[in-house]
Image 1 (cartoon, rainbow, N blue to C red):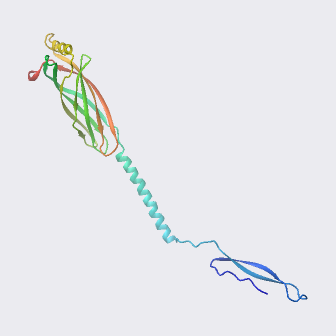
Image 2 (cartoon, rainbow, N blue to C red; image 1 turned 90 degrees about the vertical axis):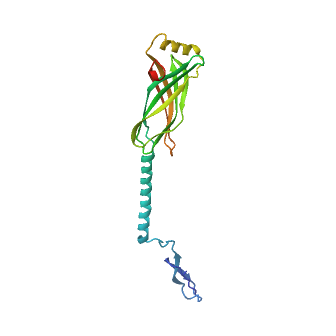
Image 3 (cartoon, rainbow, N blue to C red; image 1 turned 90 degrees about the horizontal axis):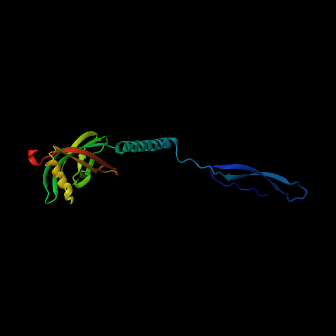
Length: 225
């Protein structure tokens, strides 16, 4: 009569099993034996105790919170705010006119006012101004230098522009000269319109603006005006 042997494994469950054995003597009854088989348990021992898990979870949670706060602050300070930009044409003066060469020289100032509520400096450049007389364009003047408007400030900067006409329409300049001399007009009206670009360096943000102003210039030339 042979008994089953248990498996010597840790963390095991024990299941009793009845086994019937037949006696060698036919006159003796069959004997029932109860053997115990052990089945290995699938339960694994935890590799992390509460003394280790709690500090680790706290550090992970703290890192996530700090990351979210950092992203929020970056968005708040770096997100571009649309600036309020105003333009004005001032101090226009006629410098000279040459009817033979079909040229007209004009000096004027373009005042650019910027209310920059960003947390970064705002820059403006590529200022183009078209000079229009009697509904026709005399030419364009371009200012290529870069203006800087500090962060969180409301500031006005003046851009001096020197214009030289490029029109080939002789009747336009002759009509202009006649208005100022023969007809004795005291002022002459010009329309200045154009565009500019403003940007924040370091982030992908560009603001394109336009302007249009009508200016009455004294109808005289040079320093005698």
